[in-house]
Amino acid sequence: MKWMHLQLKLQAVFLFFVSCFAAAEEYQVAPAANWVKHHELLTPEIPRDQIRDGTFYLMLDTQLQVSEQAPQQRFNRTVMQAVNQSGVDYISQLNIDFDPNYQFLTLNSLGIIRDGQYIDKLNSAELQVLQRETDLASRIYNGTLSLNVIIDDMRVMDILDYSYTVSGSNPVYQHFSTKRTLNWSVPIVQQFMRVQWQKPTPLYINFINGESPVTKTKLDTGFDYQISQHNEPTLSSASEVPHWYSPYKEVYFSEVNNWQEVVNWSLPLYQSAIEVSPAIETIARQIKFQHADLESQIVAALRFSQDEVRYLGLEMGTNSHQPTPASETLALRYGDCKDKTVLLISLLKALGVEAHPALVNTEDRKRTASLPVSPSLFDHVIVTLEHQGKRYWLDPTISYQRGDLENLAQPNYDVALIIKQGETGFTDMFTEPALKRIQVSDNYQIPEGIDEPVSFSTQYKYGDFEAISRRSSIAKNSLKSIEDDYREYYQDTYKGLKTAKPMLVESPEDTGQLITNEHYTIDDFWRPEGNDFQNDFYASEIQNSVYKPEQRERNNAPMWFRYPNNIETTIKVTFT
Image (cartoon, rainbow, N blue to C red; front, side, top):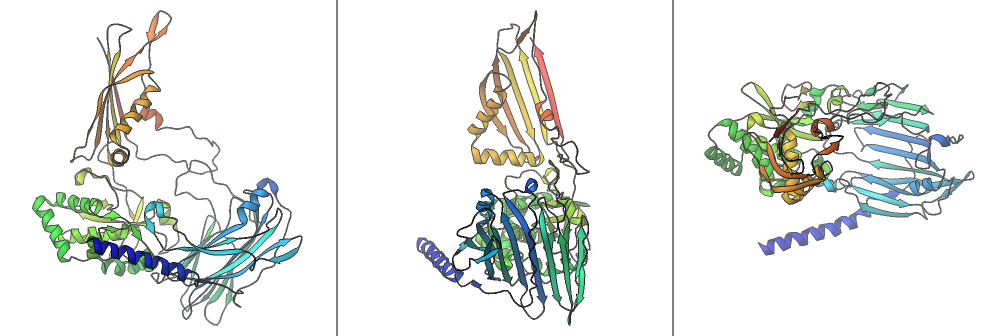
């Protein structure tokens, strides 16, 4: 086993060097293709009171060529001016991302305009291909590379003008789709969006939060669609808004026009990976032997996919959306959301339970249902099933989840697209939590003497995802560290507070709650007020759950608020 482990490490090192060597061949410097349309640059007066990061954007130009015969081409040109030293720092280094598994990068132009004169920087700039794993902290490896460009001799008021073309698209997508934001929080002089559509199938164009004129020109095959904007008004979003809210205008181009087409595209990806192999049947038999009723078996299958298979995403190329076969994920004992979803569905199938993948968007949430149809809208997948007339949502990527089926904390991303034959739209995900999020019981034992220490005990019952979060925090930070944090929290209110006995933690398997029991003594509890003594008692969890908005005038922007947020506090004061 040691020799095999060493071999695997040597293979990984070899592949690393091969990939580094290959990276140098995965971009070139060449002029833009003939199909690309050139736009003349405008240089108006700089609106200095609206500039951020010291950068004035003069042009954003995106052009795509899509045909059945050749790889997709995406041309991008950006022109921006450094109006101060902050702008010089901001624009003098670029990172152009591409996926070498299915894309090829061509740097078309790179130069600066100084006092009206163009200075070519293609030969003097430093170019280097870097591995760019932006989701590494989330344990996701996507294989993206970045052409790092460092421009020499950049000065204040210089204009950077660069363009590049990315050829190729992820082959996992059978249909074309793209989107573009059309108004921003900073001024942009010129914006261009163009799709040269050379396919016989129709291309659907939809807008969100406003529209812009679209010029349509007939081609031999298909059409040329162009959007041109000049000095579009800036727009700023309100503060304290939900994650899903966006006031910005966007245009969506898509080859699909209904969600059933997205379901039909996704179905074979998951069906080909769901399997009841001998190894999966063995796990299912063990679950049946240990758990008599079906509800417990469902939870045990979920727990296995959560706890026995670690989260790790190797999402290079088609693996971004193509799940790994269930038996392979079981053997590897790691996988991302779609791999763990397929494994859980396979285990449930071996237990005689029908389950399906459900695509969700963790950022856009309920806004997803109102967006134009596109297979690329989703960033997460979970499992859904029906049992005794009730729908359940199960997420195999969650750690530290406990509770039986009725008390299981169910994820809520507002809407989900269930990948099942015949599904044509979204399903509402909201499920009323079985337990309160937080239940607090504060007990104060007041002695007869004013100067005697007060005994204070508190019990917290965390339910739903709050229990999962607290259980995870204890596992990562140690119980002692959590205990110290809790004591310091109370000492902000009671300066004379001391720990009377160690904190006790309970975790009932049936409810999935996390229960903490704390015991303290408080010296100098009472404050003199004239001839009397007094103190205040706070329902702090309820008090802290409500906040005063910083921005009062919101222009119809929604304000974020946790929902549902069930908190119960009981304060009991006993006088001797």
